[in-house]
Amino acid sequence: MHKIGYVLPAGFQVMALATQAVFEFANLVAGEPFYEVTCHSMPGGGVKASLGMSLQTRPFTARSTADTWMVVGVIDPLASPSPAELLHALRKCSARARRTVGLCTGAFVLAEAGLLAGRRATTHWAYADALQQRYLDVQVEPDRIFIADDPIWTSAGMTAELDLALGLVEKDLGDDVARSVAHRLVMHQRRSGGQSQHSEILSLAPRSDRIARALEYARHHLAQSLSVEELAEAANLSPRQFSRVFTAETGQSPAKAVERLRVEAARLMIERSRHPLEVVARETGFRDRRHLREAFMRGFGKPPQSLRRDARLGS
Image (cartoon, rainbow, N blue to C red; front, side):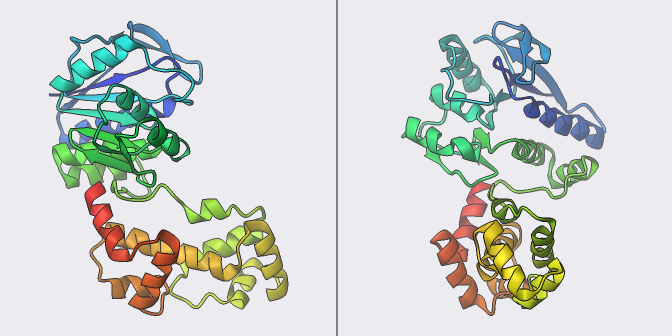
């Protein structure tokens, strides 16, 4: 039996509890109770979540035991430091555990306890800069879904916690079990740790349904030319009106936005597959491998081969 202990601070973010479903379904897929999940807090008893609900917990002390500790984050990790007794207990417990995990802003607690010193880590994108500024001995990688720097794991925010939990299941029970758990949880895709937190569709944030519809059309037809005329037709606007409205709503020209979508799609292919770069370029609408490289240098400041290496290191 692999024991997983959740450490819940006052005001913990409730999304972290969703990761427990990953372990529940892993038990079902495995056909036996491989994982045992418990919740802990200082000093135990009822602890309130950020939403106000209360959860009963076991006391978390320096003598508590688990194979994997999952340290849950709060909405604002900068509001107040963690209690000294919590950090002391975490250091002691982590030394005896197989793994210690910082979920979302739980990375701040790990950093306060000194567990991230000299290690690679990530956290919610909104707090990544603050984590780096506060803890100079931590190598913060703000654009990662999760990072496994054994025996310390950290995740980005919210739904990325589910990806990390699936990563733990894959490590323990294999890829087939992890894939089956993801399927049962109706997760759109199982993302590796090296993938980006960033989404171009979200960052462009169009205000109207017409422009959103054109962007969705572009995302599903990247291998096509995607001229202004083609996108305008998808939005049911004239080409001239489409260009004006698109730029006003997104702050980007249609051509620039399409390149960003192509770069994002190419990045995902590079992170999730071993396709040659020529294939990646063709599938995502770039003229050739050289055109792909030029776009990556503009977007990321590094070539696609470098991002492929980074993704493998982060998974």
